[in-house]
Length: 234
Image 1 (spheres, helix red, strand yellow):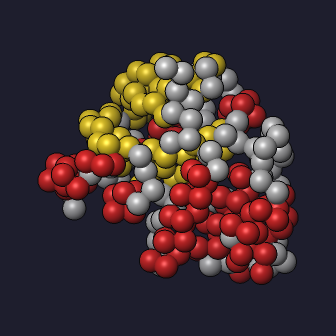
Image 2: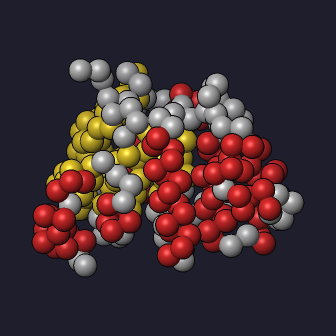
């Protein structure tokens, strides 16, 4: 079998003196959509940030595309082909939609064109000259995702893309993730809403207290609702 696109083993992470990840392990094959499920402060976002090198200190192993990245700076990790879309989205209020979209550099061939992104997110074409401050939460999320699609990143890290959005927009984000999967993108998705996660993912890692405590194939999600409810406090 070929090596996973991303393989994380015994990942530890710290913010200053605070030890936030305790031996996290996960793997994602090329073209998969995998979620990290868990309550607030379970370590989901810290896992994404540790993969990107955005924590104070980390240890263990993170292999991306067959290469070890645990010792790399965050900018070199991004240039290797990992795109990170944080929960806060990072839209620049002083720039319009097109300027925000064009801001990150292309890191490798294969990124989507602006026309392709507009097809995926028609709102962004309609709002091309609108400043970032004038966008709805859903439009900001579309812009944040579209921005990393342009770069040529092969692995997308999406942190709570459905958080705080109207149900109709959540459905659109779900359709987008499924479309990205059909195009061969690989996605690691942080979610609290396992009902949404169920519509897009192949497999779910459940986190508690900075550790992976369970792995649930999507086909077994409904049969696992009892223990998921306990983990997630639903």
